[in-house]
Amino acid sequence: MFRIPGVFLFCCALALGGRAGLSADYEIGPGQKLAALADVPWEKLGPGDVVTVHWRAEPYREKWVLCARGTEEKPIVVRGVANEKGELPVIDGEGAATPKALDYWGGERSVIKIGGANKPADTMPAYLVIENLDVRGARPPFHFHRRKGEQAYVNSAAAITIEKGEHITIRHCALHDSGNGLFAAPATRDLLVDGCRIFDNGIEGDIYEHNSYTEALGIVFQNCRFGPLRAGCPGNNLKDRSAGLVVRDNWIEGGNRALDLVDTGSPELRDAPSYRETFVFGNVLIKTDDAINNQVVHYGGDSGKIALYRQGTLHFFHNTVVSRRTGNTALFGLSTNEERVDGRNNIVWCAAGGARLALCDGPGQIHLLGNWLSRGFVNSQGKMSGEISGAENSLLGDTPGFADAAHDDFHLAPNSPCLGRAGEISPEILSAHPVKNPRDIGAFGAP
Image (cartoon, rainbow, N blue to C red; front, side):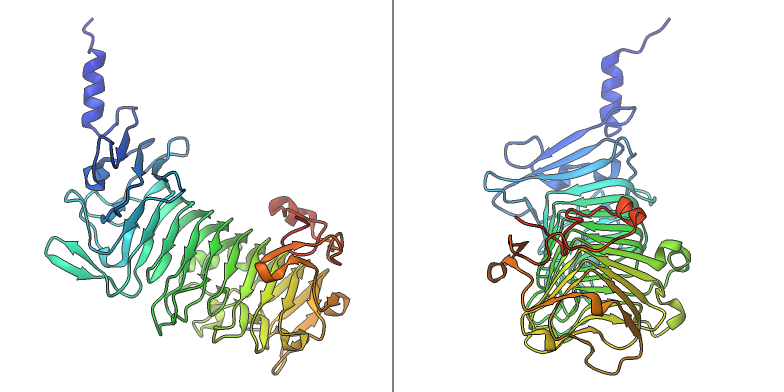
């Protein structure tokens, strides 16, 4: 029987970019086999391939598209390796060039793009992981190099743009100095954003760019640190139009609103049962004094087409909300009376005093249980057209007993009235969405 030598099979696999059952590892950076990201055969990536980008002092001024499919067992991974100080390798869109083997549209809207290409052949990307990269520089007045010369980024450009894709993970990345830090279009499915720092994005004087702007079917933000937007940028911090949104265990500071959870234009997302239920828990939400809007959380819609609004339930529990506004603060802004909030075991502290705190900004149905609120709060600082129940049973005080609020330590001190005072939450909800300190009010227990 004629036998094909193993060496021949191995060489064929390399020629196919690691296919024939084999995966490939591509190491880029100082002292590695590949010097530049352009040396990676992006157009040939397949299941199990790993692209490792090592830190160097000079940013990588390269941009690319990921339009490939991994598998659940063998995802395609693009990861950075930090230096000894923990600094991530920088992918900078300013002056960046695209590898010649790639051909895709939307370069003016991304540094790293997922989905939508001519070369490689277009497909629905799947099982992709991007981690440990510092991605920046996708906004005017920055430019990038294309075949026909330089082109400017548009206002809506993002450090990472997802045109389409399923089972995508973005982990431990820094996304900043762009129009949007992260952008995901409605053809996105099952997106996890884990442990990222998203900050310093936006366009001056433009309300349409945000730290994060997403619209997906199934999306989780967890363990992330959202910082303020760029100075003079009036966008929101986390703006979302998704079905199946979960926001858990994040730090979200600044923005016109901390959370702007509004309607989708996608019939598929709107028809999903998960469009009507949103879960926000275990987060620290900080309202700073530079925002035009006094709302911390907006839930419902902004298109003006009321039939498209979420008209469901925002499950809002075990969060710590801190307002540093000198003027009025509204915890919730609900778009219509068809929007509902089930708010349990939250700390809502207004540094300017409870008289500056309102629970809502007009319409909506709000049910409260087991919360700590600044003493002297009001239901609304304007005309109240919705209904609030359960507020009268809240714990009230001038301070909830933080360990050190002046230095942003919002753990509970040993004498905090919030320790061990949490109210009941449905076991079904806690089973699906567990919290770290179920007995204590707020996002944290004791240090």
